[in-house]
Structure formats: C-alpha cells, structure tokens
Amino acid sequence: MSQNDHLYYLRKAIEVSEKSREHGNTPFGAILVDADGNVLLKQENIEITESNCTGHAETTLMEQASKKYSKEFLWSCTLYTTAEPCVMCAGAIYWGNVGHVVYGISEKRLLELTGDNEQNPTFSLPCRQVFASGQKNILVEGPFTEIENEVVEVHRGYWK
Image (tube, rainbow, N blue to C red; front, side):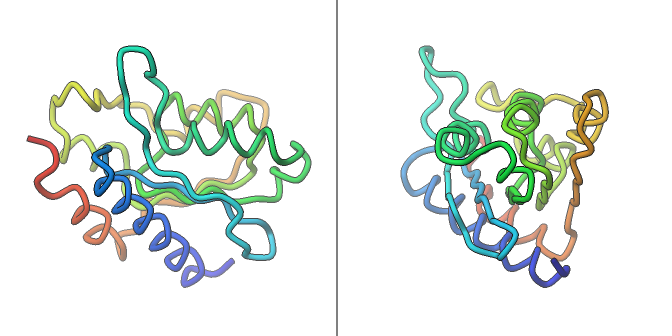
C-alpha cells in the first residue's frame, strides 16, 4: 500500500480513538485491514479496571481477529493503530500472526503526552525491538509525522 493509503487508514483509526474517548475510555484506536483494503475490524480501548488490565485496542482487536480468522489469513493483514503498540499489544500481534503494523505516533511521543499518569505507564521498548526478538519478520511502519497532530489532538486535555 502507498503512503496515502496508510494515512487514510490511520485516519480511520483516529476516528475509532475519538469514539473511545467519547465513551469515557483512553483515546486509542486500532483497525485491521485485509490485503484488498477492506476494514475487517475496528477496536477502541475498553475500560481498564482492576479485573481487566488488557483492554488496549490492539490486544482486544487481536482477541477478536484470532477467533474469526486463520493465522495464515492474518499474516496478509495490516493492523493500523494510532500509537505504537506497547509490549503487551506487540505480543498479541505477534502471537495472532498479523504480518504488518502501521502506527501514527511513537511510544516515546505518547510518553510525552501521558507523563507519569498511572493509567498509561509506558514502556521504553519499541515494538520493532519486541518483534525482532521473535521468529517472525513482521513489517512495521511508523511513526507518520504527517498525522502526528491529528493523533495528538484526540489526547489533548485527557492526561491530567
């Protein structure tokens, strides 16, 4: 897919992150796109509670995707997400077998937004490094500076 295609789908993920915030959740969104450009799944963050610590958009999307699609099919798909997948989400993507990840802003940029907010204790561990530690050649593209302001805008005023 072209850079314009990536920006198109990242904007779709931003729309999901806006819905997440409207629903009272942290402002993150992810979508799964097949090789033909069809959006298969959309997922916002779900409420993180004492009894559910894995409600990140990417992890939740991968739970759904792995129930619905084969690993062989998922390898040909792309997961678009507003922010670089954290370690947990990268693990879910790896085990779910998605072959391509595209993200809007880096984990480092996200840390600048969230600070030490206990709701998002960011790791300083890029998803590329997580994937490189495994046995799969997952293609990663991001961050996209052309879309950074749009991703950041959804976070504005959330992390206090």
